[in-house]
Length: 634
Image (cartoon, rainbow, N blue to C red; front, top):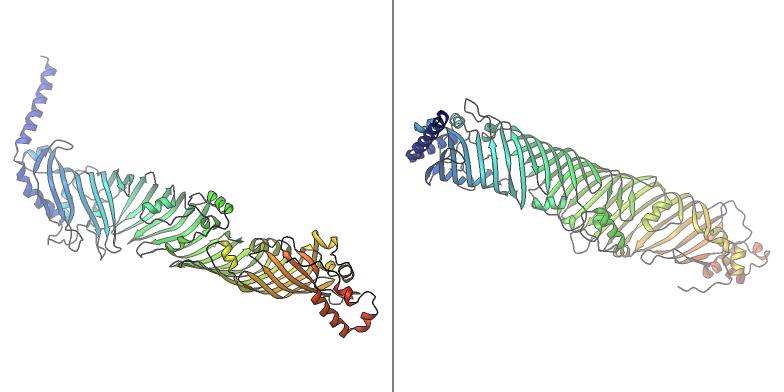
């Protein structure tokens, strides 16, 4: 036998003797010392109710079964920790002489209760007076000196008595490591690495706490943590302390909806709230989560500002001041349930009269100030606005200040009451300097009036669909437009006495796509009842004629019934008498004709005021004034 072989066999024999010696030791002699030392160090009753065995794997030391650590006074549960088994790694030489010097702890099949009390105290702070009357011994706690703690297949419950919330982390497997230093202490950095289940998702964690002793003592310390999973990826660096967290956060989620549901606050069914990414300063305390100096991107929107979410009320409360580049509410009102707003917008365009999806207004309360770079509402687009929004119990009240739209400036307000069976709406608008043609085309589908004007209205309605809302419109308003044109007809030509009355036909040049009426001013006040606009003081003034009008515009049916009385413009001499006429039918292709009743009244009035002039003009008989008129098919 070679010399090297003899040396190897000697070493192996020595190891066997050493291991045999360990198993022959009366290990139960450490039950009392371990309980007393741990109780003194933690200030909590520590009990070992099960057997104690020597352990070789995963560590050389002792395996304790059925171990408990008591909670402090006032906690919801009597025990903070119940562990099926605890492996206490120990240095071999002191163990042979009957001394236990801990190097590592492994808790397996443990139930751990972490709790914030109603007074803000935390049950993992071991520097305070506990329930059993023991006072924690910080020096003894430091002397434990372990450099590695592991959780294996354990459950951790986080409770907050202030907010009444409870969170369960299941199947936790974490490795917690500290540097191995000559002088035992817990005031060292603690790194963590592992994974756990939360609400059905497996999370992988990696991080570092700069002072583990500070955490146990209820003091603040710096921390870094990374989380990765199928639903969320996040990086946090900041401070963690007694019931609070604050620091820099970067986070991305595949879907806001999935993320909210995973956190236990599902959004109502609907569209949008898909992929999200944020970067800013995060803080959490007592169920209030805030983001400040934050950039948030989702649903093709970019937000910058401060937001806070309070989860303590029965209904979540969102507050904040943010700047948003553009909001398009159309996809969120559309039928269906797609995270992709492009798909939702197409669904909205394909079914424009589908019921509006407003159930989301009942799922959250909000107090927000928004600086919006672009706002797209049903039948109205704004270039920018300052919006003060208050959402409470399903009622949205929004004040829109400093709005600009189509070159104009003004203010508006909007109330949407979605708490009942049928939504209620109220909207007001005051805007001046607006380009009338694109504004009226978008607001009411009227495309034939151009110019620069001022518009004011105050309307209300109710209904589930856009058609119902238009059908139930009620309110009042005013409009005035300067230096513009009215497309589709030359009203001065229509009003010409000789060609209109004597022929009974409207000249081809007077109506049609190429015809238009230039005007210096166009104004009217109106009331709206059940979707029908009524006006009695329409007035159009152009260089040749002044036209006064009255009538109705039926928005649900998109039909006109208007009557006009043309007169010579101030300072103009007219060789003929203006003949009143009507405009009726579809507003896309209206019909024009002489208004017989109004013409007769105009003729009689003219006889009274200027009979000589009338008699000197051939052809101006009552018959010629009444003319021939196509029968009204309405």
